[in-house]
Every structure is written in structure tokens, then in C-alpha cells.
Length: 126
Image (cartoon, rainbow, N blue to C red):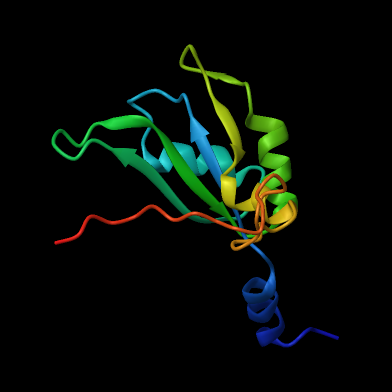
């Protein structure tokens, strides 16, 4: 029995995506070359090479959004540290994914060494 078509769409929507930071590739590498490199190991959602605003030259780093975390892990294991065109590339998760695994910060908590009184910087009078 074949699964309904909407099942695949919903699985893509509800699966968390992983965003990878890729750095160290050559200026000559374009989006298509980078896409071909990553699609061997994962399903790519979006791919962006960061470029100089004035010259439109590659700044040799970019971001790849992967549709499944397992694919992101495969891509990192396979591509991190490989040499392409004489340059070693680095592939890792962006800060968003690593911070989600850690304990969330408490925005209004006091530091342990603070007393019950907090001092506020005074603003100058006008």
C-alpha cells in the first residue's frame, strides 16, 4: 500500500532542519558545485554563499540548510576537513543548533554573587 502524498510533505514540515556553516572553500567554487558536493550526503533545503557587496566575489564561506538532522551529521562526518582545490574546508553546525541542546538561559536570573539589592546606573539629569 502506497503512503498518501501529504505524508511526505508533513514529514518535511515537522522534521527539524539543521543549518551548517561551511568555510574554507575556494573563491571559484559556485553554488552549483557546493550543492553537488552536499547532495551526495544529505537533502539540501537552501544554500547560500556569502559574497562581497561591492565586488560580488565569494568570501569563501556559506550556509547550507539540511532538511534532516541525520543527513547533516553524514555531511559533517564526510566533508569536514577534506581538501578541495588545495584548501581544507570546515563544516559544522551553526550556533543555533548547538545552543538548543544546552540548557536554556534564564533571562532575568541573578548571578549567585549578587545580593538582594541591585544598583542601577543613574542617568544624568536634563
